[in-house]
Image 1 (cartoon, rainbow, N blue to C red):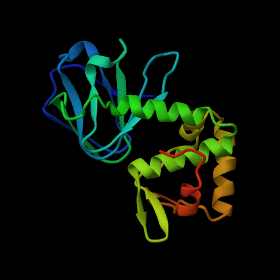
Image 2 (cartoon, rainbow, N blue to C red):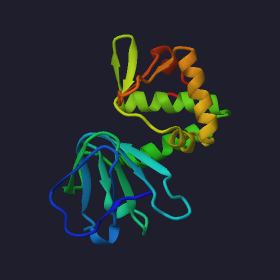
Image 3 (cartoon, one colour):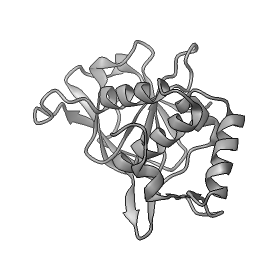
Image 4 (cartoon, rainbow, N blue to C red):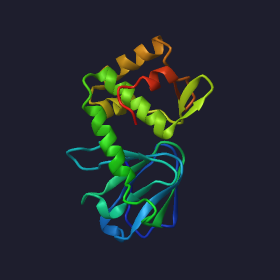
Length: 198
């Protein structure tokens, strides 16, 4: 896993291409500032050796990452789509105590406690579509794709299990992932019948 360090005094707006990651070092940040996503979708994950790569949250435009609540090793931010964020945003009083990272972590934890991998995969896709996707005609669309390995990490299974489950969804015409297209399309019926509501 490679990422560039983000420790020096950064410019106000940071732009990242899809697939790039940056390490946010909490020791270099003022306690009253946060990162605010201006455009795009990001995955926030843990860089710690024991939990390397563990997804904590997904952030989109308007979401903030509070830097005063990071673990001592910081967190990494990965651009799932072209990403732009402010590094010097003030913590929003309008949020009323809502922390998108904590909310995502809670929802991902709920998914991990479902009975089987099929339920967990369906709940994960429903959560992602309901929070980050949109309805496009007869399909629900996510503007990014996750690797089968990443999906396995999110649902508590192996890459092999994720690949097998996704293959079943394709065969049942519940999922479409055209080659060369960065989006993922899912059946609305599949999303709406999720075992968890977002």
